[in-house]
Image (tube, rainbow, N blue to C red; front, side):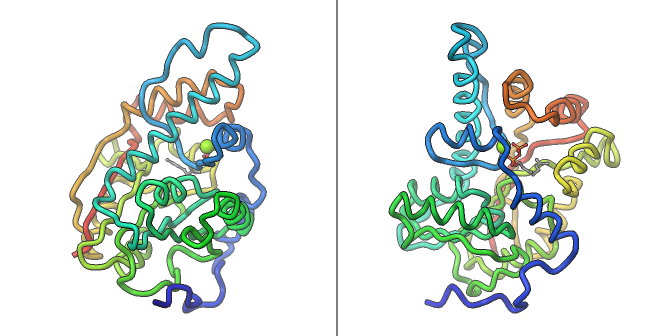
Length: 287
Ligand code: GPP
Ligand code: MG
């Protein structure tokens, strides 16, 4: 089966905006991601869920920073496991895709859990190189591969995927274009999952706190409603919607007290507490 044909447009980065997003991620070496990844070799680019153990903030000072980092990493890994829990049955012969794959954390976890083939796509060549080197070190290069591709035009074969996901990467793209590509890639009955931050249509437009998050990451957070409209327009029928807002607040509280805080913690906490923003999981079937 051919799964590595070039995208229909040879140019991966099509706009000045996409070039600026790629430049951000090519340069990114933030301790909040590197030090957490070094805990066990799974490097995540997403946030965490679940309660933290408050004892990590106490006890011997010499080990406190590392204990906080390990606890944050545990919550981020729990987030990725929650996403994988919603992929439905995936077998070793199935193919799945991680669009916006970062340094590969969720992709390696999927391969470890299901034994399946995983293709990750990202517009950051640094992330592709990092994640492929990791695949080599793990001895899974024959099953887990990362590609310098645009998630809106991946070039992979139509109907070739059992499942696909975006783990906190939808806020960089137009949702109609994104879901059109996922719907093209998925087989009939295939499963799409996203975990995302979205703003609340009920409280109104983009709040100041949400705007600060957009500014920090050079992204464009969508309203909650946009997800369902764009899925409905692309044969993706939601089967589960989980509001994870309450479950992610402890992660941000711990992160605010951690040695690797980046300054974006208060806008997240404000946005979640004032309910102008939700942390949502959406799982949908391709029909
Ligand atoms: C975090 O990645 C995710 C994004 C940049 C997308 C924005 C997400 C929203 C829910 C709005 P990261 O792990 O690289 O971020 P950080 O460096 O802050 O930990
Ligand atoms: Mg991070």
